[in-house]
Image (cartoon, rainbow, N blue to C red):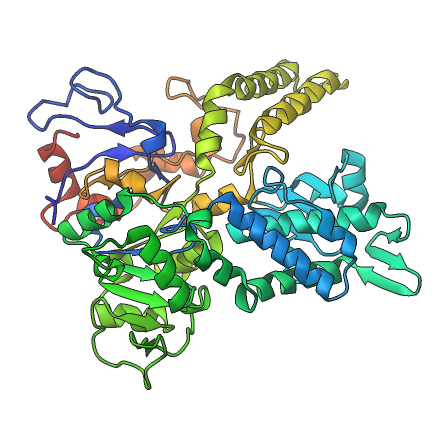
Length: 560
């Protein structure tokens, strides 16, 4: 295991700090390098932090396979699209839809499909609609308000289907295509909640359910996996650094496991392609291997745990009750059973995956695993963020101008300022910024507002990056330290500002003033008051150490 106690900082602001242990640091207001400059890794190599994570405390690192260990090329999306269309045509959908081609530039992850009105929605964390699309038509503000009062919608399971995985991208495009086809074909009569053809009526809900069933059939019963296994080079990305990275994890005493929903035959073919060589089997890189995991159910009740027979890929009779055999293949099970058999607590495990719900949210909420979300779109997002930074600055400047219009006004004002031109400019700047990311905009934001996907990533992913291989650029004793989380009253009020509480807060502060002055105790009986110290303060558990107090270890490394 690498040396414990070494600490560094890197967070959502992409800052990293380091200092020589021997250098005095009391005079520094910020943690800096000896040259006085903030140290930052290359953006493409960086890992971003939502919650502090001390890698020296991680004993197990687990990996999903699809779109994590094994990344796929856009040709796979095209194949899924074609096979799903073929399935829909075979069950009665118009043959004309088979003439359409997949456009990978249209869909993004994190969209909601509204089964009631057949719209694709881009929403924020609270259900406020940022963008609405019916087929390929982007709806105007008035069109949105006609169906969604206050441009708001609740996440109701019976009405909303969230398209948040990479496997959902072809499905997203197909839903838009079919809705657009039925809405514009003159042989169909469009209604608010569906379409009619002669004496046949199809609701948008039934169309979404048909597309979902066809997609599932392609994955579970169709020829998708056979086609991929027959031409792995066409569909699967191979990275020569993968074996190096897994080897370094194990060299540092960290145990590794594979936890995938894919069945053994498919997993074996893909993992053999991306990892094996003439001297070593891919299985030797993992201490434990679980296929057919059935996530997210795996993090709840799970399924029976069985061992896979290496000779014929079948399942052995009975469920294992003893410790799991290393490098053996297991099928199903549950997180509880698996954790008990390998001796892992929740906080011992860092799980790496791409699925915000099945990999990250459930493993975090239900089992307390530390989580590493893979977001390949970050490469594009960071490129636009840096290359088109003036667009975001324009939005901030315009919002500042909006504030200036209200600057000299208070409750005595009887006339409203004219904000129409500024608001129109903000909308135009937001559209320009969104279009820089693609047809539907950014995965993480619309203008200055964050998307539902962004809120889920921030809430449930401890760390995230474009690739887990970015860990190659960090030591395995690294402390990923998140920046302070500021509330609006903290982020918008400067420390240098003078706070006058005489009349500004009315009588609200009267009660709180008692805690600001010792005079509040005059005439009252004195009591013994407990004082908080570092031993009982759990602000950041990952700052603690089994070898000493957090303050001691920071001072030891020249970081405080």
